Image (cartoon, rainbow, N blue to C red; front, side, top):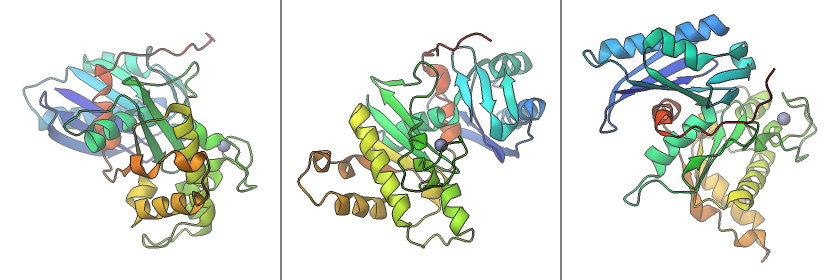
Length: 294
Ligand SMILES: [Zn+2]
């Protein structure tokens, strides 16, 4: 039995997956903040899931957490939304549960979930894949040669912080004009907190997403790109609006217009992709970051 846990700033979700990849149980708890709060939230969800599937102790637990995570050591750093500066989460959860534990970034976990449960078809999961998570922020998860890409310091896929200059707004990272300042849930709610799910997406939101899709495609040329996250699940006609924006911007016969991005696009509306993907983390071979000690 494998457990996947998705730790968010508001809630911690968990799933139990059978050896046949079926969902056996699901649970959700409010996330308590700070190192001890997050640890307690995780162990609470593990306990509820274990009670829901009696007689089978969890052998493996995968955890997705927002913040900088070294998947080899399972140490979480700079998870500002959770109130964590540094936490050896892998060791602490392993000590508390006796299971083998693997920790990674939440977007990495959702990327595995999207690859396995949204894209997967008779041909199996693709070797090159990209997942664009549009939630409160904007992040990209990348898979090449069948492996998650973390990069030297875990910055791979942080394209939401490329300062494209579509806006002059300050970003949470301290820069101005990052793509995230036009293309994210926080950008949408800043101007229209009561936004209706049928409201059209603003022009600068779509322009930023088109630019992000092109950058992602030029960087790794993925065979499939899935869009997911809270904004995607809470907006009707999301994919149609993105495809239209791509077509309107591709009206000339340029190099970029030949990337055929629309043909690679899909959307994920499931809200448990992060937890489903986290359950797959123990199967991935860890790709350690080269983080300086100290
Ligand atoms: Zn930024």
